[in-house]
Length: 108
Image (cartoon, rainbow, N blue to C red; front, side, top):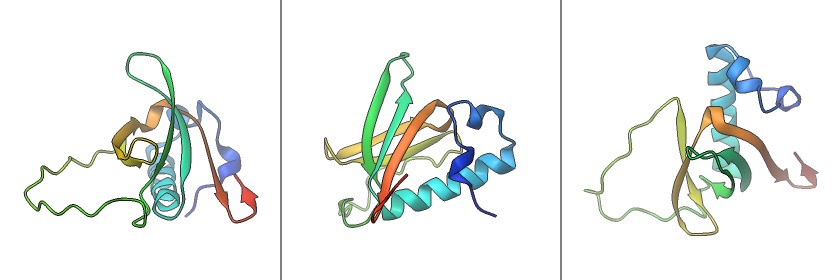
């Protein structure tokens, strides 16, 4: 199964089934592992934030300290590398309002 980006709108995630949400998360993480993504989401305090982020190994630094604390994986939020501030940030999946990325000449 795959996610159809044409389905997306800001209320899609809240209305989607858990199966569709899981498919979307898997698809989106795949995009993050290969591309730079702009994500607009609503922070816990209610403000809107744009995040220029990725999970692409070329942009994420290697962790040399093997004793660094590991973040819990969650189906409700996603940790990403913030390209602008060079640090880890996260967003809640249900707070995503908009996202965009480039695939060569294709802008999604």
